[in-house]
Amino acid sequence: MLNRKQRTERTSSSTSHDTSLIARGTVIQGDLRFNGALHLDGRIEGAVLGEGPDAVFTLSESGQVHGDIRVPHAIINGQVQGDIHIEERLELAPQARIHGDVHYKTLEMAAGAQVNGRMSHRTGEAPRELPSPEELGEPVPA
Image 1 (cartoon, one colour):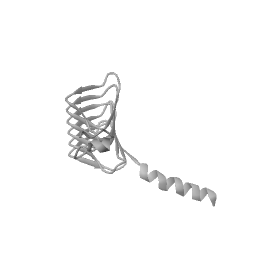
Image 2 (cartoon, rainbow, N blue to C red):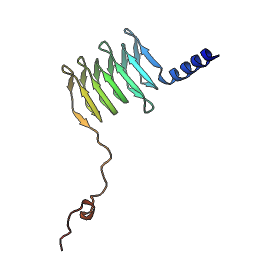
Image 3 (tube, rainbow, N blue to C red):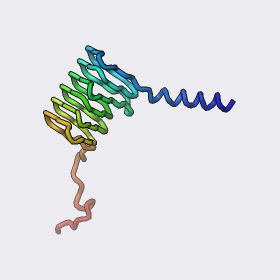
Image 4 (cartoon, rainbow, N blue to C red):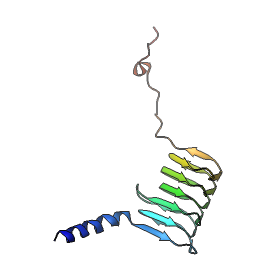
């Protein structure tokens, strides 16, 4: 009875972290939307769109994307021809070759990674108005 319960718990928890694999030699033409994790060893000719705050896109050294990438988290070690928009964390591994603009919140870039485009850091929302001198603790001139 205990073994059955443990097996059930493992099965239900693993479904929320499933990884989809697109193998080497596979070519997808068109946009690709995914939840969870996507590992690409093949090629996508279109946009890659990660849905949900935990979506993770991994591009291996043999993988290629010819289109924009919009995901919360990404690990890039292959070739990208298009803009990359990362909501949270981007890791550029040594074999990463990017031809396009990169927008990120947090970036880790290994030696050897190449970006041919603009790098743009995303910050939190900017305040809409400046704080008053009293809020900053500065004396107000009389």
